[in-house]
Length: 178
Image (cartoon, rainbow, N blue to C red; front, top):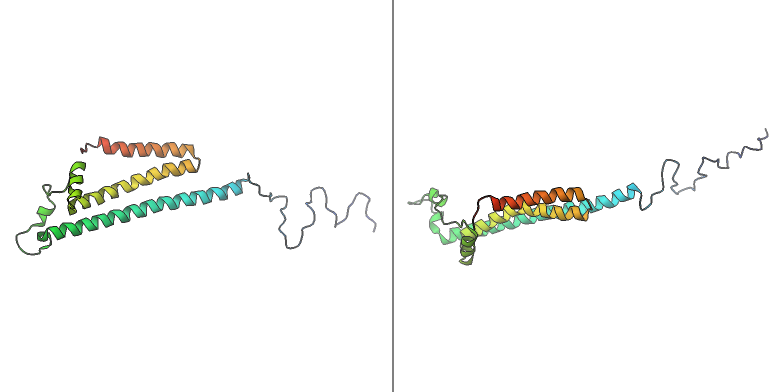
């Protein structure tokens, strides 16, 4: 049977057909756009890698902060018990309530902390370790501000900067002296 003159046949592509596919090669069809640098899929992949790096940096800050603070507290406790043998005594007149009483000579101001650290007292190291532990989440928020700037997210940068301002301000407004 003869084909009409306007029928190109099964081998020729029609106006809506992208043409024959090369065997072994992936050819985008009508529903699959060719990715370009401005394509949302490509941008999403770049953004995901950037977010992953930021998440790793934040988790590193948290892990290092907690680890360092635990080590400083442990060294402080070791020094404290080494300098005060009565703390380790299970017998005798020593009371553990005296160790945890408010009158125990732990530094309560930054100047007292500096003096305690300069003398090599364990109590000063314990307080320093606790301050490092408290500062760790604040540092995490500060790293988040930098990360949102890096990710070019102005809304989250402003929100996180506001949270950081509240955190830092609460330390000064909390009634602490030093």
